[in-house]
Image 1 (spheres, rainbow, N blue to C red):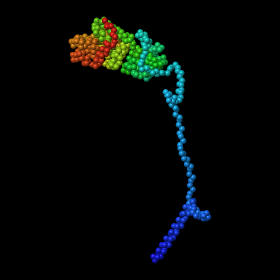
Image 2 (cartoon, rainbow, N blue to C red):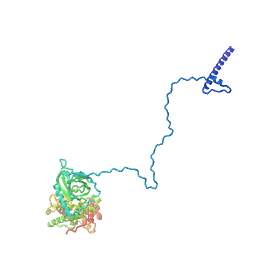
Image 3 (cartoon, rainbow, N blue to C red):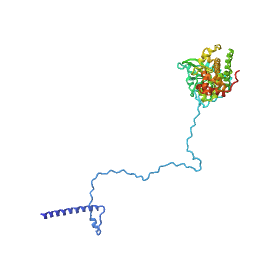
Image 4 (spheres, one colour):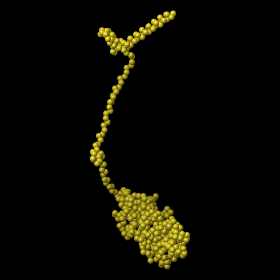
Length: 471
């Protein structure tokens, strides 16, 4: 049994070996198809009889033709602009070409019966040379006032209507220095009272102008005016509607201290007007056998100037120029100067007296016959000066009756002019008390406003060239 099994296994092994050998021969002949092996010693006949077995071609689907590939071995160079050569030794390289600007043709000026408004550039410094004497200026002011009184109600851009009444506009008379013509300029009152703001308009002669307000102060508002060429004009007088409780009461004609009007001659003329006013009032009092001391006369003339010095401007501006402005107002407005000025305390007019003090003077001196109405009494300069002289003389007599005051005058603690000034500005009955409490330092006890009042008084003494004393 075992022998039979062994024989079967041997036969299976031999058959398997033969099969493997046959496959090996097929593989060998297949590998020699392209290049047949040549055995040394064989003849040509044997080689011709040897026929290689062809390799079967396997079945496959046709492949698509690939797109041709373009291989760029090197990118072409990028063209660049050839740099401009710099020549060594030349101060600067040659400039690049730049197109020449196109010339702008000069416009032909358009002329018409009503020229367009031109807004000239306002110079930072307003300078105008006034070639006129005080007499010539007064003639120009009279001419300007006549034009204002006859003016047409429609001038320039603003026309009174139902919404813009006579109280809403002001009219300025300004002198054209080139043509020597007086032109009228109509402005809204709100624009006229707005400082540091330019307002363009058209004059009564159809010419462009620009107005700038320097400082708003009602009827006494200084301005500067420029014509269509930017040249300064000379403001002369303003027609200003006065309102009371929102209703029109009267038309004021006033000349402010506009730049160009203030000169040494106008300053002197203002001093002469004040002197004439005081002398006239003094003569009226003397005619009624009322004595006024020389100290009071001299101080009263000075206080007419002190009363109208703005404290803020006194501290921040040129004081000599400020005094010249005030005196110029007296020179040109004369009896109307400070006609509409009323302080916060109700003091008004030339001497800035309050109603209670004026009433007291009328009661104390009935023979002087002061004007009964307070407003009219203050607007009348001679009448107001009489009331001032009476009050200052009565006050000074009361102060001299005090031993404290007389002792202070003898020892030099106080001076008569500053006591009269302090008594006019504040309660004179308290001055002896200040001197008793403060001694040489009595000035530190007076009200702050009175301290400023004395500073202004002292400054005027040192600045203004005084006129000869009144005899």
